[in-house]
Image 1 (tube, helix red, strand yellow):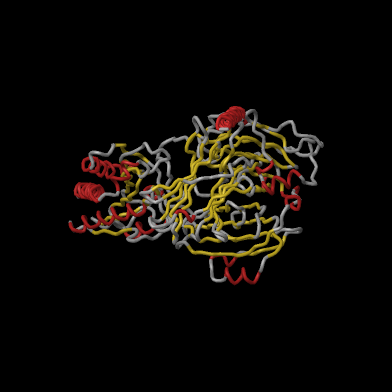
Image 2 (cartoon, helix red, strand yellow):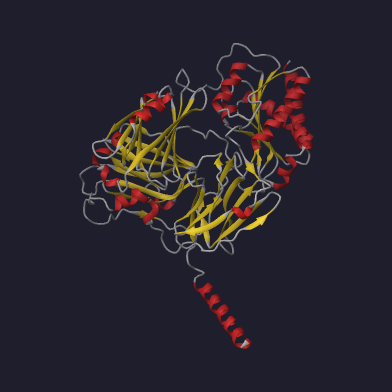
Length: 636
């Protein structure tokens, strides 16, 4: 009997080995996103494929208290993701590609408070998606993705090394050509597939452009366009990653619409392919997409009706549909009816105001930005409580928002704005919320020029700017926050300089959020002699380390050289990464000599452990203070 059991066991192992080799070449599951449902305290890891294992086991670790579990035979599409929580036993959840060779493994790491019992965490899979059942946490960071942003640079510092051309490699093994899957546009895509609007010739368009994604696909920043094609008298653009559009431009001679896609890479095989939008010759409209800059794609529509074209966003931010508004039957987009559930308003600072629209189900929407207004088209919204919305908006910046019904199912929201105002719109990962951020332009309608005239400068007065703060954590590693280190060191520099008789003003003296614009406005109002901003660097890789000093205007270079010299002298163990001319907002728009000090890399384990020590923080503060003193004495 024992011998029989032994041979049966060997046979089972043999079958398993054979099956492993047979299915080794099957394309791995694609892990799409990590997001949090605050209504039921569930964290979802979504996948395009129903291939995930039913059994997931997590491994507990200590120092800090955390668990991790691996998703095998899986590829994370796009960048690594992170959720940070407050008022909770859970600190953060991170999702990243752990290994691609020899196996494809996506790893999830959950960090807890030290006394939390990790056995309370439950894992399960439903329809190929992983569900993490948690206690009731409250998010610190939002789970919104930007879909429209008019600012030339991000309001936060990049987590990638400044001034580098870092390219994140994402392994996506494929066999043959990737075609747009049915799920790529979710509700919108299915609506277009089932639309009553027939193709002009009743056939598949020959001008469809699709590319082969190799196993060494490089996602340069956030979005990779792999396909575009005419569709239902419009144009469908789809890809991988996170799509964001910039402010629309209208040009003349000839009339054309220009839309830039920042953080986007367009495969060379489909660049500059001009395609007619009316294959039957009923119009002369054409569209072309090219790689405008290293990490920016540009869409150009040539049409005498260019201003009528609307960009329609998919709920997963993976696709963009462009169509002449007069040709659009928006009921063809509607597969599900949605209602406006709630409206939230928040004043962020003296110039920025936020509006969040919450919906009962994912929405199909578009936007049209004019010089004097912002128009949101909510194509599948049927109902909303007008009195509740008026009550919520009363007394806020958004009290001028008006809602009007579209001819068929749908609502248009219109907000009067100024030409100089800046707009940013974000969409929740589940497609059930839109966040609109309006930042008022300067009174003269322009941003501060490089060096406007000044009435006076207070000799010996110094502005110290502790980077990040409040809801803006900056870089985060192993529960260590950049905002805490920058505030600690800024306060140490202040103490040293005050003891020498210098006048100091801190942009922030506590854990509070201050926008980049308000940091500059505060500094300008103080009329200081110099401005010094403190930051901790970070990179996707854990290899980079060392100290950098950034300047922008020529009159700031001498200050940067002197401070950098003292930092390298005081911290000889740190790598000297040198000086950089960088267009960071606070040193670009501050009119006095201004520098930004990157005092080390939080992403490097060894340097991170040193950065949090009293010795390293005090030596850093002493070095920067001595550099400031030498510079000011040299100006007398």
